[in-house]
Length: 414
Image (cartoon, rainbow, N blue to C red):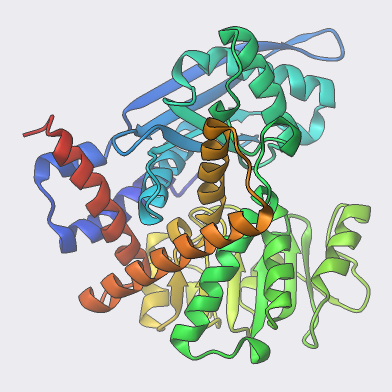
């Protein structure tokens, strides 16, 4: 990966540090993950052959609470990426004021080429390897790219078999039947839609007249399109890994998703013209939602972006170089560590429900989510205005302040 994500994350920190000026010793601590676990384990394939898989679990910080962060199954998983994503989880939980730290995991594999039984053996094998480092009070995994509630169920089952006790709170994003939270399925998108609505109020954009383009039509992306559609926004373009579709008059996000479920892609949807992922990013629209993978908006294409608001539903979709260009163009960025924090917030709610053994109605979950997202948005916006910096730097200032404070209070570095 040409653009090292961990380096990008450190550059984002540096920008915030130039405003914050936190104690050098504490700043030194914030720049490094606390623990990196690298594993290699065998999985018996359906063919009878044994194949070895490599995986990682990184705990970036647990100074504010147990680590929290997803596990992704993807061919491009690498250590720099997992370290960066773990660090972003630290900042994300801090932005929304959740008493947790940051962690992330990944296994290098192509889940699209694996059967259900192979995926199960892979999931159980990985958990067996990282079991000593995870747990309800240590580090709590969750789903991420190409991992599902079913995969979380296998991981929970394996972990409980190893520890010989029931501990549903050791992992989130579980099926409802095993202690999952209502509303978790659309939590990332729900949080994103709440802050987009908030940003529009701040910028004086009328949702009923606003157009939206969504890059990435997976769980987060398609739910975001549906929720924004319900708020009155017009969805004019969406895309997935195979390509995109565009209709100036508007697309029905529900019908597009039904089409994707049938054909495995949004491409070929009736009454829309084909566009590429690159073209989608550069489309004339009010709100651009990158909801796919990292490094999509770069120095190469940032100048061509015409949206008024970029709502980062994906992690790290904008490079530091692109950030500067968008800022100069006066484009309002809702940074990933704020925009997509709805997922981790509801994961936190799931963890609480598992611990107290009492489960909340969907409405209650969304009410609590809305309060946290609006508070976080207002907090970040206030710092943004006060320091005349962009929203990303403001979000980092808020998060780093909170994490630095807890490091200082534990005062192991003075």
